[in-house]
Amino acid sequence: MKIPSFLSASLTALMILSSCGMEQASSTSYNDSIDMNGNYTFTSDNGGDGDFVALTDPKENAFTILMPKGWNSQVSMERPQGQIRSCGVATSPDGKSRIFFGDPNLPQFIMPNSQTAQFLSGNTGSPMIVVYNYMPADQFASDYAQRCFGKAPGFRILSVTPDQAYAQKAAEEARKLGISQMPAITAAGVTFEFNDNGKPVKGKIKALTFRLESVWNAEVNGFTTTGDFAEVEKIHEYVVNSYKTNPQWRQQQDARHQQIMQQQAINSQQTMQQMTNAHNQRMQNMQQNFNAHQQRMQGMQSTFDSQNQAWMNNQASQDRNHEQFIDYIRDENTVTNGTQSGKVETGYNYYYVDPNTGNYIGTNVQENPNPSVYQEWKKKN
Image 1 (tube, rainbow, N blue to C red):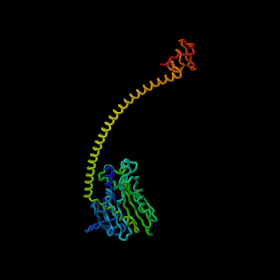
Image 2 (image 1 turned 45 degrees about the vertical axis):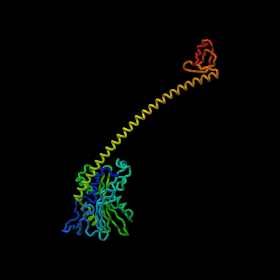
Image 3 (image 1 turned 135 degrees about the horizontal axis):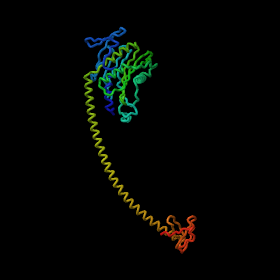
Image 4 (image 1 turned 180 degrees about the vertical axis):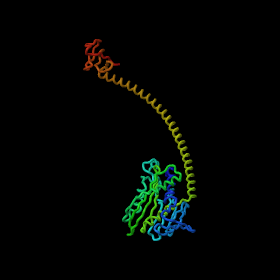
């Protein structure tokens, strides 16, 4: 499942430029020059000399970066599961130092308990889209160093330092891209050390994180060395700051993105129309079924009412017949004063009952023997 395009576009653009430290080369630590063969030469602040060669992404001609001459270097533009990652690694001839930028295995993160996470229902279908809590750069860099080197003997983090300059460069590039909604950007560097077969190794991880609403990404670069940490750090900075995107490739990506967005808009409109039509049809079917159901229910209710009334009339008639039959067997009459009823011995024309005790007097003469005590009860038909 794909991330909603309104969130992924800006972050994808930032991923392209942030993989290794923005596009504009910086030479604050070195005075560089270029010879006729395309080789770069620098003179470091401490007097050492070195050469750099320009390497271009062989897959898409997407970017160019300067790597130390003589080092075993590889660069490429990777697209794991549709994500875009600029990646590269260089190892010194003596094997003491290793520089890298980018990580093709870093996914795009979705913050839990967000509408996007609910949209994805916790199952993205891609290992490159992961629901995970947001981490600022200092926390992410520390976590990344721990995951990569934490099992090595003697591993420990020496320092965690915010990198405002790195974050500001990312913000400037975002503005150059014309991103309307600026993401939250953080940057930091983490230095660490560990032992490798008894040799002390020191390294540094630089991380950049950027978050837009519920989606966030991270990019990393760094180095390890058993040699001169300060010198390798300068080379690393020079390398990552030399990254330049091919303008033609970016134009192609922009055009491709526009085509994808247009097609997604068309597909979305068609899908919405299909959903609307299907919804309307379902509502019509539901209304028709409801009307038919109401008619059936009204017919059933009328039949039930008629049958119930006939049953009640029959029951009332049976009750009267049964009561008369019981009275006949017991030689009793049912009498009433209009609100109360009672059983009396048959054979008299008039009955007078004490309502307080239930005692009654039967007589054939219509004369209340004691009006202050008795009430006249009449036979109930």
